[in-house]
Length: 479
Image (tube, rainbow, N blue to C red):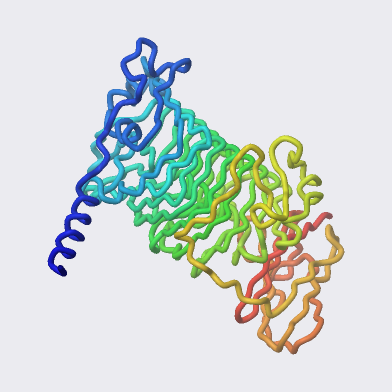
C-alpha cells in the first residue's frame, strides 16, 4: 500500500514537472487582418502567451537605423489580453529558466545578439500571476530582463503582473528590462525582483531602464532587491530623456548597500534629462546606507510635486542632484498628511480625473482611478518600523531670513545630531551633535556654513538622527 502511494506521488510530481503548457497561436491567427489594430492577436491563455514569447516572427519586422538612431519597422503587430492568466507553471519551463522574455536583445562580450519587440500590448487590466523569469545568461552578458526584455516604439497598457518573480543581472524590471521610444501606462506590478547587476546597471519594480519613453499612471508594490550590487529604483532604475508622471511605489527596496556607483532611489535610481512629476513613494526602504527617498542621481532633470513618506521611508536624503536640475514642491510628509486630500490638491494633483483617496483602499494613500486596487505582494517581507524616539516638529519661520528655529521633542535621553544639507545632498553644517535629556528642545540655524560664511538663497534640508531613528525636513532660505 505504501509503495503504491509513493509511486502515485512520484508520478504526480513528474507529471507536474514535465507536462507543461504547449505554445499555441491565438484563435484568430491566420486571419487576413490578424495582428492589426482592428483585429489584434488574442492572448487568451498561457498557451497563447507562451506562443508570443517564443515566436520571434510576430515581434515586429524592421531594423535599427544608425543614421537616425531609431528602430525603423515595416510591420508592427498588436496583441490584446482577454482573460486572467495563471503562469505558475513557468517556474518549471526551460530547465528552470522560466518564461522566455518577449524581446531578448543583449550584448555578450560587446557583441549584440537577439531581437527587439516592436508592437503594442493591451492587457485590459487582466492579470498575469506568478510568472517566473530567471535566465541563465552567459558571463559578460548585459541583457534586458523582464516579461518584456527590450521593446522599441511600443505601447504597453493595462498590464497587471501579480506576484511576478524575476531574477537576473543586467537591466531588470518586472514589466520590461528596457523601454526605448515607448509608452507604458495603466500598468502595475507586485512580486519580487532580484538583480545581481554590476554597479553601473539599474533595476526597477516596473522597468530597468527607460530611454525617450513615457511612464504614466502606473504603480508597483513589489520587493526590489539589489543583492548589494545593482542600482535600484522603486519604479524605474534609470531614466534617460524620459517622463514619469502620476505614478507611485508602495513596495520595499532592500539590500542596496552603496558600493562604487550603486545608486538607490525610492522612485528612480538615476534620472538624466528627464521629468518626474506628481509621483509618490510610501515605502519601507531598507538600505544599510546611502538612502535617497526619491531620486539618487539627477542630471539636467526636472522633478515637480513628488512626495515621500517620512514615517516609513528611512531616508538620509530626499533627492541627490549631480548636475543642474529643477526641483519644485517635492516634500516629505507624515503618513497622516499623505492621506490628506487637500494636501495634494494644493500641489496641483488632479483628483477629479486621475487620482482618488479612500480610507479603505491602498491604506488610505492616493490610488489611480480606473486601475484595480493595489495588490500587496506575497513576497514582501515584513519590515518593522521602530517607534520614533523623538518628534521633529519643524522649523519656524519658513521661509526665513536670516535665521530659523528647529524644534524637536525627545521621548527619552538620547544622542542627537542635526545636520544641514543643500539640494545636492552636500553637508552644509553640523548644527547639533551631542547627548540630550528627554523633553522639548530647539536649535537655531543662522544660514551659515561650517566656516561661518553665509549661504545663498535656496532650499535646504535638515536631518535629525537619534540612535535608532532618522527624519528629514525641508526649509527655504529667502534673502
